[in-house]
Length: 437
Image 1: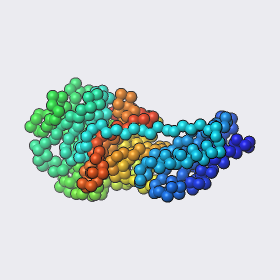
Image 2: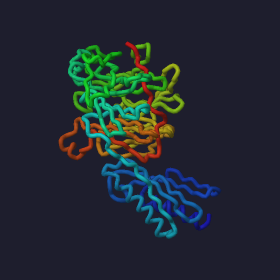
Image 3: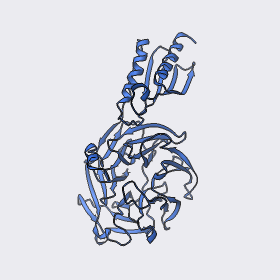
Image 4: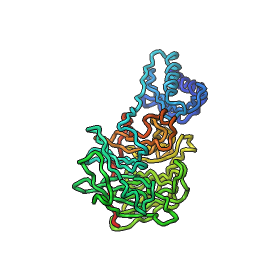
């Protein structure tokens, strides 16, 4: 090993030693003009601060130049400023010993609020045909339509005449929204309480009511309306590549964040058939995503604290062989897994409720790739959108926050647009073919 090579390894292990970290991967290849050292560093051992960040890579070339270092956006209890401290530490250690080194920083993603706060934002769906984002406010019974071209939000309100229906107990709320395939006037599917509903979007008014009296409202399916599950409601759902609706329920939630366990189910609803139970029992049925080949279905039951995967048969709409992909507690990730989407690399983006972040996970290895801090603690769901499908839209909630917490989080309840991630959607979100009653 020549002096240059020895220097490269010395610098890497010096940072490693100071940080108290451990080697993740050490890759050495003399034939390419690169050396790669990847290591993990615990910031608390350097700066005496609580939290962790990951310095993922130092890439050296044979012309004696440190090309770059990368530092992951792993969640930190005291904010994200520590990442810069770690980057500066690596920079100083190498520059002092190696004056000819060049340094390149990395670009942080940009997180921008694009709507005002709602009470309990959820269920974002980007409609590629119209170039708008739909999302719901569960507790205020609103389906919202955000148009980035005009920066305006319009609403459909599910009012008193719906709220008083016997089969929809008070507090049911609307929980998801998906455009219907092949409708000349925009028809949408939503869920409220125990019901699956079709309604038409009105472009005439900024806010309009959807009720049984408006002739703009049809119930096409109902689940769990029996007395022993009267407090249940629909929660999250998506359409698969065939336009079939996969949606799940959750148990009663007398206090925000406290749900009666094992009362819900994941259902399949498709044209010509009623609801079919696919997974049960479930506590809080949440995020769904499918891989590129439609051979895997990723699924979140929030109460488990993890993402699971099933083998998926797209032709038969069957799932089997459930297994763990990523557990937040085991990986020391703050919050609870909520909504989820998948990117063009096949990696998952997961909203962390009460975690102030969205995490990016490699489902093949079960490894944490990245984390994006969000200026709201209750991050509820995510979807890719925009003309190039490279904007990550993030919904959040302010439901259940104290007045002091609302002051500390003035943007809680907003929809955020995250840009600069360097990835896009695996495919446009699927629209739905409605099931029939």
